[in-house]
Amino acid sequence: VALFNKKQIPVLGIVENMGFVLCESCGHHNMPFNRSERTVEDDPLAGIDKLTSIPLAREISNAADSGRPIALHDGENAYKDLFHSLAKDVVVRLEEACAGRKEQDEHIAAELKAGRLDRAEQRKSAPPVG
Image (cartoon, rainbow, N blue to C red; front, top):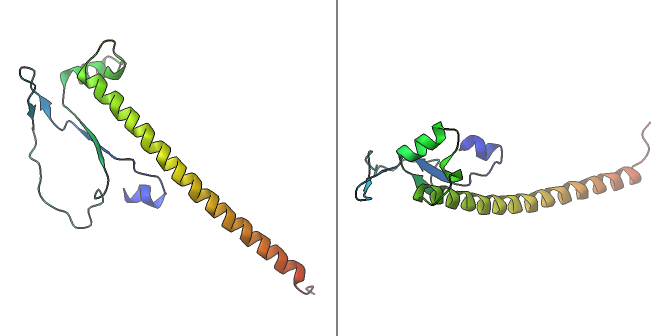
């Protein structure tokens, strides 16, 4: 996260992979890993939204192994909808980040232009050197 911040690359959010296992019989979300209640001082992930949690699912793995992601499969399935929803959320967040970046870049460009104009005026009024 620090590297992204240093390079001014926006972090759109976090996707938790293999966050749960969906019971094939009843649909219950089984958590294979304990949820930590521990807090971390200066947590680099603090303030970053969790976009979704992708389950550990045989269907997702099989689709990926076949070279055709589950989001591209025909017919309806919960996993396909999950990935489509995630993609839509990422697009919205990316558009917002780009709009913010454009405003920032325009502000910086205006400051640089103003600085160049000021320096050019100063050079014109400066006494000749030599």
